[in-house]
Length: 213
Figure (tube, rainbow, N blue to C red):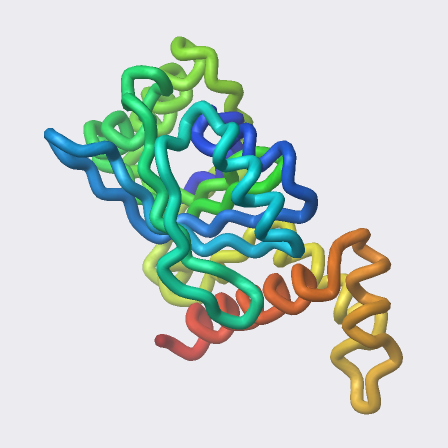
């Protein structure tokens, strides 16, 4: 298997991601229906959920959105999308080549995805599909997935990796701490709640991959 980390400028939630500062949209699952709009469940982290609601109301990819849960400063949204023909859906192409999405996170930089591909031809097929449909795509990393890596390679986004490295360098992980969470967030130019959420998700990813779920 090949592991690929890609960044897509996909039209799904593009308006929302571009308008809300420090937003992170963590994809959970997508449901497709023949007689109803496609739906997505996602956790959203943001400092201003009024801004999230306003942006979603103006987002051409969104038909309706509902908050179904709230936990620790983040909210679980169910998003109903507009006619799928209005935006190109990459997921059927991934399914067609036998690819599996491990993680997808949307930020102002676009959609970061970590995907398992059966071979290099499958990667090239999805890459060409995106280019043919005017979806800017960047391959961040591409590497072989060995049995050891399947157990031990941490599934970290770039933002989580950056925060954990800064936490180590700044003394946030030392006892006693030489840096507060607020100072760590300020160093990265993000809110304290965003720093806390990225830190916890990053540590959870490390623990799950090294010690098991």
